[in-house]
Length: 388
Ligand SMILES: *Cc1c(COP(=O)(O)O)cnc(C)c1O
Image (cartoon, rainbow, N blue to C red; front, side):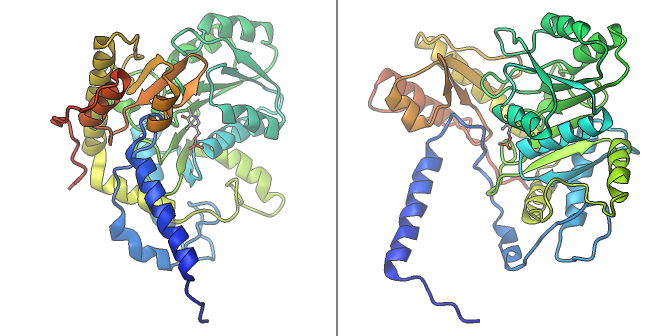
């Protein structure tokens, strides 16, 4: 069927949008989104109505799908997060929020009478997820660095110890990139002799580089997590928001059975699912590999250390959590906030040194903070994303 072309006004609007997006992309430091990707080799795949509906591990009828790549992505992260090689499952979601919704859904199906515990630094989407699932929950205090207050956690659970426990722990909180210690949480539950428990780790921000931290901080399956979420468009980068959920196959089977009783193996939250995202993730992981991800993290860490030091050098009270690529600073002027798109909450703002952030950008940012006219551009830290 022949479709008419855009008229000139519409074309102009499209051109304007292109320019606006280009400008906005070039100056942001405040959101955890990598922009140094190149998926042009996959352009030809946009001609297909790709749809990954259904469970990626089940044979479906619709064949314009990328389930094979999706399974490889799941297997990659299952291994990275030290899942039992015989007991993992997952799927590529629309982002960390959907991954968290799934983790909590799985937990609630296993323990319908449970109480959910999460800290006050938890991502804003979690409250909404709990509301959707209609499960009771208690907010636990955070320490000043953003990490869960384990004493408050222990005391609160003790008061409700007759109920199964679901913990939503965070590995990389939104503002301060604090990491809740899954091993410590597990230890507290063991001490209190709480047998029925489930830990979902929201690693949307920091899960992809968590395994490369030295020293390692406990967050994965071996440390005690039952499911883990990550966002794909953050550290890896993607033109479309995307995420991954990894869970234990044995748990998923328990709920899949329940659903097959009503005639379906519909194990994902949405019906139709984006089939291009798994392809982007597969492509990025194939090109980067473990070594590439590690190099990206080391670059980010070096830039974050540099950023923190430069801020301190001009008298700004900046700090970072251990191993974090997020630099926390007092909130800035509106002009700076707007130009660099710095997410701000209360009195603090942050710079997130995603792999695309360069030393030159930090220099320009510091220069803006000092109101000088010429940024220094000696970019020895520039990261080469040529990958191969
Ligand atoms: C980004 C983020 C989310 C939400 O992920 P989306 O991919 O934006 O849906 C959840 N939790 C944390 C800690 C995050 O950083």
